[in-house]
Image 1 (cartoon, rainbow, N blue to C red):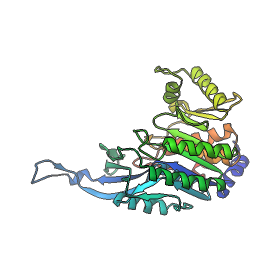
Image 2 (cartoon, rainbow, N blue to C red; image 1 turned 90 degrees about the vertical axis):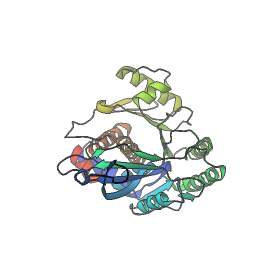
Image 3 (tube, rainbow, N blue to C red; image 1 turned 120 degrees about the horizontal axis):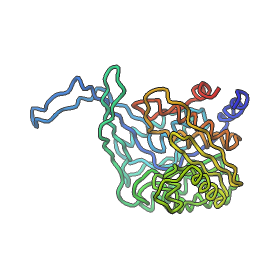
Image 4 (cartoon, rainbow, N blue to C red; image 1 turned 120 degrees about the vertical axis):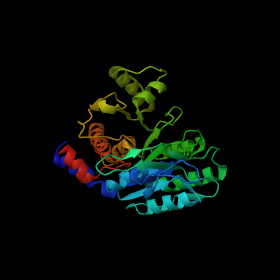
Length: 338
């Protein structure tokens, strides 16, 4: 990609309106100074002294962070937070992101705020070391009233959008935002607005999803193809072609160190290899940066190959940001690509 084409694509980002529909969580980082370790007088157990606490939107919020870093004009989170302290922190963090409109975000007493609490050992001159994570999740089905409200919000918003990114982050089906009711509503939207770009990703796999643009990793593609064995690169390409032709939508497959594969419904295959490592890495958030960059590029008029190139560069930037779930900005992308 040359500088002129990069500027053409990135220059359109400031006109885009993109919704992120899915499971927003609070990423709460507890920075621990190991030099201040103590032994509790009461229990005799080690005490980890937290010297700094920081919070940022996670899960679907990570996609949102990446859209904001790209300078997308308007970003609409559509999801829920509980009426609790974590929900307050999450909404405050979302409000601080440029271009974010929270008017379609739901706050409810019927759910708790999905939270990833991440203790980090922070020592001078060393990369942060993450300890065992403490998660807060919802283990019961999302109440019908909450589902109805979410459906109303995304249905009312859709006509004004250039794209929707769908992220299903929960471990238990029907316990988050992307329920069967939500998928049916999104499918209705896609049929009513055939030009609206909808990209979907799910940690439990995309089997049963309507025919949106699919983004997944190679293991998820193998599982969708009905095999438990690792696919070769050629088998991955063929499975992706079959899926793209079946959905009549592009399919994007992340291949870890092998890069990213993009396939058109016509069977065209575009693969961009991963960029060389530049030091220690942390892969958390790389997939979400790919989703954000693929969607933004496609919505801005990029072709599949250009979109994959931009997403691959974003992932390379993000994995080199340690101790946080990072993002990739336009200047950072430019420095890697040009």
